[in-house]
Amino acid sequence: MGNPTRKALVIGLDGVPYTLIEAYMERGELPNLKNILSRGHALSQMDASIPDVSSTSWTSFFTGVNPGEHGIYGFMELNPGTYTLRFPNYGDVAAPPLWDILGGGLRGKSSTLSERFAGKIRTPLRSVVLNIPQTYPALPLNGVLTSGFVCPDLKRGTYPVEAYDYLASIGYITDVDASKAVADPDAFFTEVFKALEKRLIAYEHFLANEEWGLFIAVITETDRLHHFFFDAAFDAGHKYHQSFIKVYRTMDEMIGALYSRFMDMTGGEGFFATMSDHGFTEIKKEVYVNSWLRQEGFLNVDREREYFEQIGSGTVGFAMDPGRIYVNLAGSYPLGSVDASERKERARELKASLSSITHEGSPVVKAVFERDELYSGRALGRAPDLVCLAEDGFDLKGSLKQDELFGRSRFTGMHTRHDAHCVLPEGALSSGARPHIEALAGIVLENILGI
Image 1 (cartoon, helix red, strand yellow):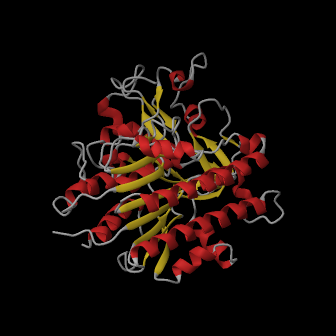
Image 2: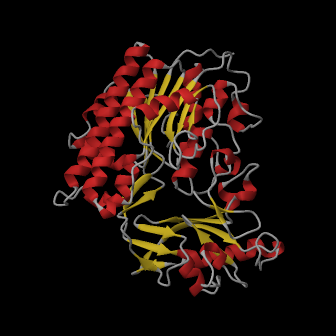
């Protein structure tokens, strides 16, 4: 039987790439993180989930299992038996998060991770969980939780009510207004720094004033920054290059402050980590996958209707963000045209077509995976039939509006699966192993429990 021997602090840095951390450390922009690495920690490049969308990757992190078990494949899904959209929320997560595994509140859920640690937690431990996407609305737990993106209502997104009262009292900001990045970039950066200031105040408050064994604090402003200003990351002539750098310096100062407090609390014996849910790279082109499917005769659209209700009769398959492909199965959708007996064959036709997309002679799609290649578990029925993994620079979109195959929007940065990062104590990873986001929860639990 294991014993809780160590506290753990995990700082999530949404969308912060390994390659950018390396480059900025070399330039002297991240002195606190560099100091942490000199004290027995190692920076590793990490693989995120497939698809590499925040809702899926963060859920893969906090449940420690693949989407086939936790059931979150994207920010949007279709309501069963329809083409109408819904946003899966925290209540849709089918596997228990690591804080419920630690805290003894599984609520009837189980997973390969919870089964792995069954009977190994002698005393339930409290957790403080701050700003992780895909945790709205807040559910009761043994500790404190305030939701990350999407969190439209701070009160519904926070448990217990005393934590909400505190956050409201300091003017805590759940998320920045991303529309300002286009309409008024200066106002956007002002709001980013205000949000970071409030986050640090809140994180230090809960660090010092709550009992906990696990503390998770996420910074999401980096993701917003990257989507709109990733072209400023290395371009010294960019109008917002110095603002971009300032966000990273502020992030580094936050990491340093939390690390120092944590190590003081634990006498230098605590388990400390940082991680991201995916990486980022500059966009060359947005790729409108449904436009390709229409051109190839796989998708029919009725523009008189809205959103995915535009899908017309005779459709073989359609795409949803980011690169998820669904066969239009008879019995599953109102205008389903593919019999179950033909599902795999039609999926493979779609796969062959999608694999052939090029832009100016360069391949757009790195790989197309069938669902059974990626996923396993009780939530497999929610999975897309195919998932496309793009080459860097080609941002796969599920919009039905565009007629052209390639285009651009105001986004300058896109997610990457292969360039997430983690900072872990040396020896936490198996020698030579490339980390995967699904493995982190198990590593955290092992180190808290001393097993």
